[in-house]
Length: 447
Image 1 (cartoon, rainbow, N blue to C red):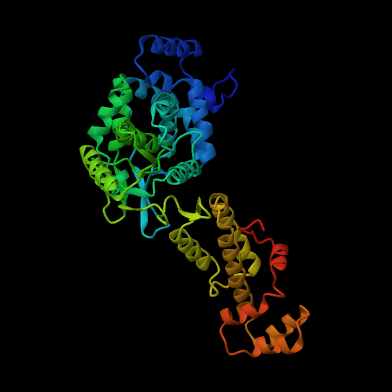
Image 2 (image 1 turned 90 degrees about the vertical axis):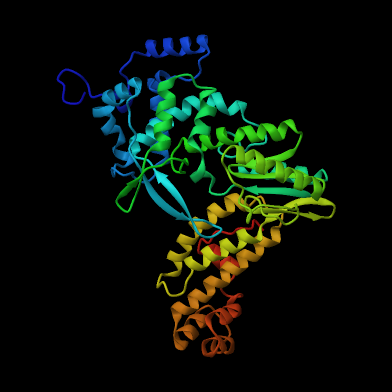
């Protein structure tokens, strides 16, 4: 420990290591021999803790109710880990409440997150690293959300394949406030089938029941597994895997990503039967289907993970959904508002951060013209912003002349009674795509 004479300062990993590595290996060997599944000793093993600490640091994240940042976590563990480890092994560790935080949803409204403390994120990550290798290989191949080596793009490719096979009707199911309504008893019963260590089960139960702090008041939780902690995604898949397996048993072609499930069938009548079946299955888990967002409908044009499927030249292709485009434009409008008083370079810098992320996800669209159209619209927004910055007619005239615009055209734009948006269309030849490339603006389209 720091401050002890004659001993070198230990790193965070050494602080987490109270048992010898040989004891960790012996516990793991005994665990595998007895077939009892995951144990708390494996969670607190040195190698597992080192990986968990690295991952929590890498993911960063906001502080929890105690205000501790992940940058201070290692120093905290150097002092307190022996006590925490003892509590975990004895089954007495009590997680702190999570901090409620609301973030805007792309579709409107907000999503509530529960932000654990840095210590609890660290412990949850350590649990996840032990459980995920055991649980994930047993999950349905039709499940794509929150799983290593799988992505939303993989889910979309599967949906596209099912539609191309002639399944033109989709049973689109959205669960109502799923993460807020997970039944703890049902979830724990599923976990208990695979985990025999009562200490580990008890620790997971206490994480589920940890209170939530909002406006200075801690409220108890009797259901739900709030998004924000490393363990919640795995628990969500454990909860829903039973329905996946039943759909598999019945031979259905389906894709599930988190709480969104799309089943592809060949007729509306078959779709209605599947919807009735799913209502019954989810009800047995104490979950409800959100009827306003769910439907038995044509697979063409129905939004799924921000994309939609359409037919073109006898092929099934994927495009950016109308809802995703509307959300994109709303965000760009907010960044490029002409009353914010920011320079064009500052606006482009902020805009690029958003565009890179959006492009990274939606570049898989097969509607190249959509990206071209959005690029053109963004540049026109920025042209209007630049005109607003120049503001006065004489300044606009002088700036346009400096760009070698014809005198009569520059004068016409400078003196036009039209608004900034209308006048911005006349600048396309001088504030051209190439000009915006030189300013560093990210293009959505590769063309």
